[in-house]
Length: 267
Image (cartoon, rainbow, N blue to C red; front, top):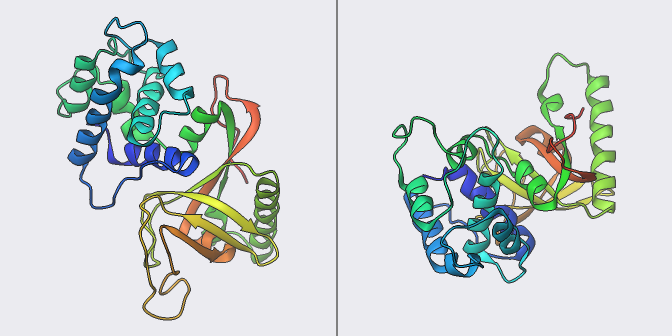
């Protein structure tokens, strides 16, 4: 099946840019597979421009570029396009039957695996950002904030570099994604992708969006211990708290993606 993290990631980016469908946190992996296949079944004939029963690369490109492709349909076609670009696996012809077989096959039943399986194991919001924009991404890791081997002066210097990086990205209105690994703050979802909606350099605060779209009210003073108020998935938090709870972020650049989707990671 399409992995939970990958499908959430696709829905996240499409929803963030086109205000389309989001994935509910209570949905199971099976629910997401059903939704994916429902979208494919509903739209396959429209995507198959020459009506030969197989989605070609050109037809995938056309569907991805079509502004009318929204919601789960947009997430599904993005997933198929990303899978078609895999260098590790050779996809079978993208007929409706083959797509269904790829999604419903039980893990371990294929000796060669599939591109969709590969993506499910290693997909990230940053990678999808590169795919959708066609540009390389620049990642900036937040590990420095938790690295006890660094001196306070070094951590402060990297933090200032991070602030400058964010300020420029926000000023240039570049799409930005970020993600968590393990979290300790209530209301933050571990191993999850978020969108960065804006950065207030004066107040040193980030405006973030969780694609689950849920609300949250802290049970105590706002901060790392109790969390941050969230409405329809949108919330704010100080940058100094962000670097302690998030793994890092990814920002679109002007450089064509080419063979490599991203630049060397900062710092």
